[in-house]
Length: 248
Image 1 (spheres, rainbow, N blue to C red):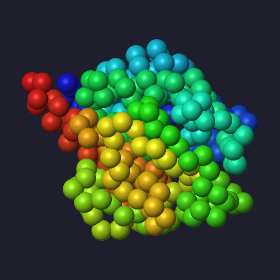
Image 2: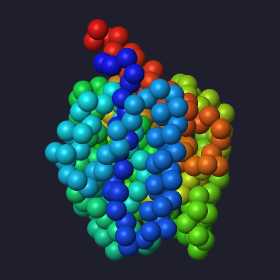
Image 3: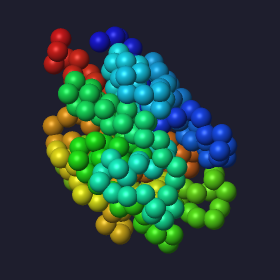
C-alpha cells in the first residue's frame, strides 16, 4: 500500500446529453466527493462504469478504497423484476454489471467500499437483494416537480447502535439529505441494516464481515450536515489502514 492512500470514485456514466441539468448536478455531487477526499490526503481516480466490467475492474484495481456514487436506477433485470414502474429512469445495464462486479471484487480483496444512494442499491443487488421500485410521489425522500438542484429533501434517519455507521455518525437520529424514489426491499446476503428512515425504509447497510458500508442519502450535498461526508470517508481510511497493517 502507498503512503498516500488512493481512492477510486466510481460513477455510472460521464455522459447524459439527454438530460444536461441532471448531469450537471450529478457532476457537482461527484466533484464534492473528490474535493473532500483530496482535502484529507487521498489521491483520487475517477472512473465511469459504463466503459464496461473489464475496464472498471482494471481501473479500480490499484485503489486502496472505493466510493460508488449516485446515478440512474439499476435495471430491474438484475434483481428479478420488470421495467415499466412509476418514475422509472433510463437504465445503464453495462454500468450496472460493472459496478456489481466491483462490489464482489472489493469483498473478495477486502478493499473498503462506501456506497452512496445508487451505490447502496448496487451493493444490495450485487449480494442478491431486491429493491422497492418506487416509493410514491409523496414519500418524503425526494422532491417532485422542482428544478433539479431542489430535488433533495431533508429528513431524519435512525441509526442502529453498535454498527459501523453509528461509530462514524453517532447513534441519535441523524439529519440527512435524500433524493431517492427506490429503496432496499429484500436485504442482500451478508448485509445488516444500520439505519432506517421515519417510515421504516432502509437508509444504511453494511457487511457483516467485509469493510463495506453504504448510505441511501447524499452526505456530499452542499446542504448536508457539516462533517458527515468527512466521517464516512474517514471510515474508509480507518478500514484501509487496518487492512494495510494486517497484510504488512
